[in-house]
Length: 274
Image (cartoon, rainbow, N blue to C red):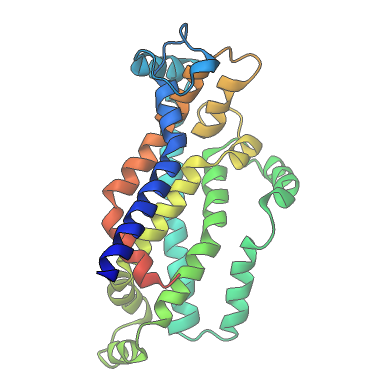
């Protein structure tokens, strides 16, 4: 009886917390769906008409999102994939191959997450400008990969620590090369952890604003979030429902990615031990 009561309390508490968490989503959807002419700041909690798709089209045109989708998709796929592979290779070298001074190498790699990104923006901008990487897709892929590698290496090092040493020794006895063992044994075993890292890093790259604003300028290179901010600028001229619709529209791909890969993400969190 006691367990039933505590279970009911827990359910009610979780339901209340869930509703509180969903309030911003409700405000976003309701106000993004309002007609631009009928928007009133005094009635933000009340639905009033449905012009969501018209506001989507308005935001798409005014922010020129079409030119940024391809570039952002490229960054959100290529950079996380490279970061996952580099991080897995680093974890494999440190844990499995027992790289000399492996812990110091791990601290060196993970050190990339210690300092705030804002501290390196100016030297990063100067370096990109002098090397010709500024406002190029290659430059954006490089910086997003570099930013994503430390977290990937951290997770994969922890993951490989949980695999028995006998797996590596048995593969060596069977005549496997170090690269083949990594490619054919350790990478498949870490599939769920790799998927979880990819989802997290792809979401980070898709939602990035700071690096996109600093290191890109043209419509064909600029990520989608800096393009979206143009709706709120002085010269953007977009009404609030259009701005909210634009924010809702660019968030949909990450939501779809998470829902489609939710099973791999949950399994990766459990196996990755992070």
